[in-house]
Image (tube, rainbow, N blue to C red; front, side, top):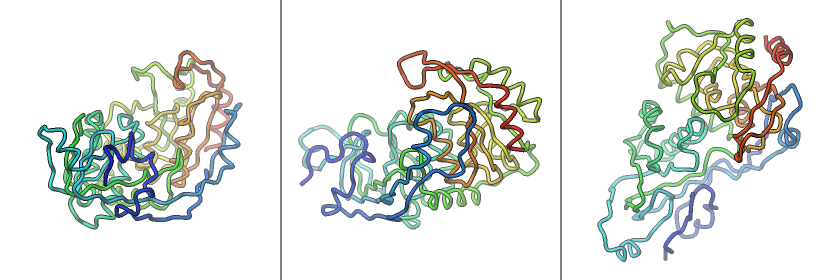
Length: 346
């Protein structure tokens, strides 16, 4: 019998194998070992860099959990029909297949590139042409609008449902694991997802696509992760043949068009660099970052690069913390280090 809440909080943080006896849970691609590849750096590195590069993480596989006639809320908490009856208030019911896609960070651009979109693709593969709707937390509405065109290319995708505080009833509900372990993605699945993406998005070969691009944050309204010598760094990249681009000024398909012939993508640490995954031509990403960055997400671009068979080169700079979160810091990048890396990546 269901408890009030089987999967408390985020379901992907829970061990789905706990419910194998009660529900239909299938695991795919077990026994794969994940590790970072093709990662280099210049400058004093964060203390955990070498430990991170040497780790070999056993990948437990992508598990798919199917539950029929169930109720779910925005946090992924599950309720039985009996519990819902006790609430004594109307509850929406959807007589369709629904795939749960909500997660912490689903209001962040980069998470949709290496988690949310490939998860929807995985559901599509396992449902084998059946129509399904994706379930999202209500906070994901604006980000879904950015990626909606890409979801429509996924076979079987039939729209999105945004969950509020109250649970809703679902005829057939599916959960699956995130396609990543920390900053590492399961390579084979991600390459298949990218192959499908490139097959379904028609690019305009007449669009100018620079061989080398630097993503600028100069017009970005957020002040965290502040590069103190940003203008000098951008000017140096410009004089060395990089086209300076503000990615927030373009739509996603426009960015794919722009990146279709790009070989090297550079910029400050952030989600925009994950767009290297949406290019078949990018060979190297250059990431500018703080050498004492304590965020668990600072190696994220190395994970994307590993999954896409791209090189990742970090340029670390000295800095200091400026606030209470791991994103509150300022740092300075050595122009000599930039010059050296540009020469190295030619």
